[in-house]
Image (cartoon, rainbow, N blue to C red):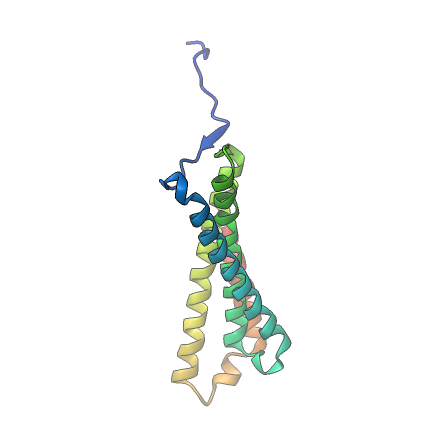
Length: 155
């Protein structure tokens, strides 16, 4: 059978949120404010952890990675949402959609793995307070973070 009747999908049409036209600017400002608050809050956390030497502990290493992951996670979808709210073209190319879904799932999984590492860190701190420094050595913490990034990439 010849393949003459084939459809090639090159882009998706994003329907967006059902917002009345008179409220579009209000919702755009609200979403932009939430996005900027998320970005600035996570950047402040990361910068403070880097600048303050008292915060160079395992918990804050994991927290800074979690903040970076959250920053990237929110930056995967919000810019496209804000762009679609301002333009009449609400389409996304097929490759762009696949890329966005990949990074959305990547950073969601990364956050989950980081939360597991943070839970392990708190478990060791509570159950083994006298041996905490030797168990959660800087080498182990960096190795855990690298392992988390590798596992997330492979996952």
